[in-house]
Amino acid sequence: MTERRVLLIVGGGVAAYKALELTRLFRKAGVGVRPILTDAGARFVTPLSLSALAEDKVHQDLFGLTDEAHMGHIELSRSADLVVVAPATADLMAKAANGLAGDLASTTLLATDKPVLMAPAMNVRMWLHPATRRNAARLEADGVAMIGPDEGAMACGEFGPGRMAEPDAIFAAAMAMLAPRPRPLAGKHVLVTAGPTAEPIDPVRMITNRSSGKQGYAIAEAAAALGARVTLVTGPTALRTPPGVSRVDVETALQMLTACREALPVDAAVCVAAVADWRPEEAFETKLKKTGEGPPTLRLVENPDILATLAANSPLRPKLVVGFAAETNDLEANARAKLAKKGCDWVVANDVSAEGIMGGDENEVVLVYPQGTDRWPRVSKAEVARRLAARIAEDLA
Ligand code: C5P
Figure 1 (spheres, helix red, strand yellow):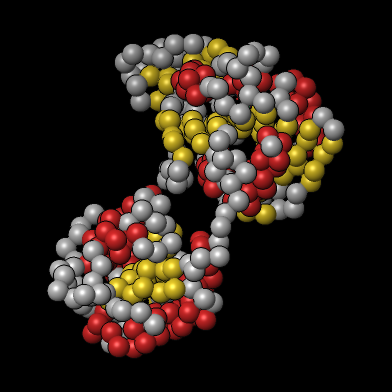
Figure 2 (cartoon, helix red, strand yellow):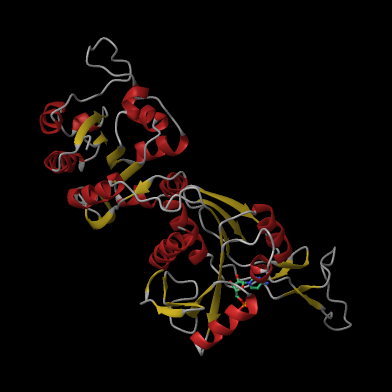
């Protein structure tokens, strides 16, 4: 096996001393470390210590071409399997979030085509400042993995989130990112619907529901992580697009159906969206006003069933069609009835009457299919998604 290599960017913060321990952990595990030390970082740790522990040259200067060991920043940015930024200061995060490239560290982050793991470390007020919140959200949306910060007493005397994660935690996260990933869904196209739909009544009012979209987004993310090409057709949510997923935003059930049809052919379709059963027969063109003649009458018409449409017999029917069922009672019996009614292959049923499931981060599901039933324990929505994606991969194999 060829040696795995980390490009370690050490920013300027008190936590920089922990980057030395992190370097030692990597070397002990046989992982190569190529360090980049920012000017501010060099105020906290010396190039000599970093170089001694990394057993490699420390890169500091964007324009250090006179140095015979110097590597161009593009080459440097591609020379590793993973880029780790520890500590990731507010300044480094701001630069990376905005694509600035004025020094070696930021240029490398802009030029790299490798996964990036950041371990933020800064004063609690800096971490909580809206600018840093924006930058962190932007970096995550760009696919940067974050670890920490931890909460605790800080060198500046304050208390709160801002302490860099401990070296062993950063090391473990980095090793997980370096591990070769199985990609059993490579070459497969998976369609996921998620979120609520919003059916207009007039230009300012609509019929919608409380679906957060979390479970559907997690499934899209998990399928992409297994190598699938994923199309996520989503109603309005407040969620970021999972890395590697192509997202189609819609509002109404009719738009969702059209977007799903346009995504075909797919190998598997997973319908998680909470599609409104009915929509107003017509959306008023101008805002409804109180007239003194009492409330208006809204006539509703039924929306198409997207799941049943995708599951219907046709040359474009996906090999696997999965529906979801939010139930409050008789979970399994209702799910089995839904399986038959919708013509899909599996139904994933969850008990939405249980505390903390609707809109929460956990789920407890039962997977119902013609030959049997699997009961999964209560786990995070991300874990439900990983299990389901793995099952889909088995089924499509
Ligand atoms: O019939 P019910 O709404 O309980 O079924 C839920 C399942 O059907 C979910 O998988 C949901 O995404 C899907 N569905 C759909 N289109 C509809 C209604 C439900 O795809 N109009």
